[in-house]
Length: 103
Image (tube, rainbow, N blue to C red):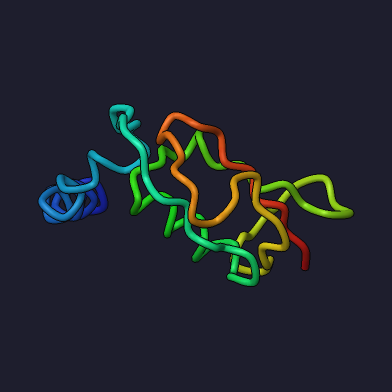
């Protein structure tokens, strides 16, 4: 009985901390418009992806294409070697951006 009471108390104590987690994993509404494409070649893939998301690209509009591997497990261990859109050009936020990455 004491274990159940303790478990319940822990859940109630953690509830306020967990309340702010509702937005994690929630899809953002699609943004529209154009942005200037940055030069991402040579950047860490995780940083490059973050840069694109800050510009307004949705996560599903950014694809990491690994050289010599099937998938990218941890983008922070990869470097961008090419990008589908040229730096300096205007790109729609709806465009799929493919970043070629290598270890």
